[in-house]
Length: 273
Image 1 (cartoon, rainbow, N blue to C red):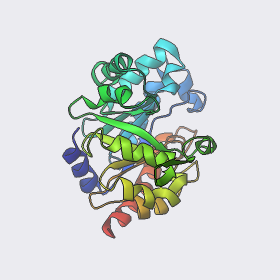
Image 2 (cartoon, one colour):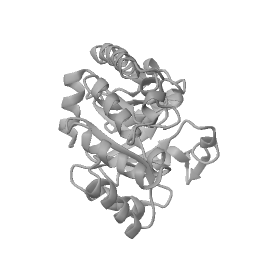
Image 3 (spheres, one colour):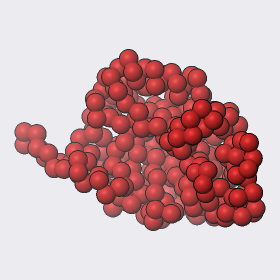
């Protein structure tokens, strides 16, 4: 999916909602757990229930890889089930030396047809470049995360000549020139909404993938206030707040209602920009 298509979906649906399919088999409704393909059955119901109100799905691959071959197969089936109108993200946080990254890129862009993958930039440009070489695919670089450990490195102050700033700012500034707003996004945790205005100053045109709204306590209002740009420019991810809105047989209806509430709130913010 290219940038124009993504923006068209955002504007048409008046939504920048990304539903996180972080499907923990121990949390899905009891009546599904005995199904031979429980994870996929759950995902399929969630997708059917939420696809009208979101524009993207994010699969955290750890929840599938931990189940071995069966989990990997459920992930593949899920990706193929997601409509082509929706932006499909592999939240895999890959990144390694060039030839290894090339294999990761092939796995998540060719073998499984994701539109985007999250990447850790710590090893530098040659570890990210293989992902950027794909046409109409996106590399989503970790920028500023919401976990407590982000203070260990991301928010360290560094000096370079007469200028100084935080390490995450240098990551954004440097990584932005490796790609374009048409193939590069950044992860910014929703609980870092106070930093969003600064991040928008550094990368005004890039899309931002923002996890942490909902169960993690991030404010959609704050994220939208500081993160939206003239074209939208946001994908706000909600996982548990939607997919586990109910643990009963009405889980799909509850997910649909939760997604609709997010969409309606987002529509209001878009109309004020």
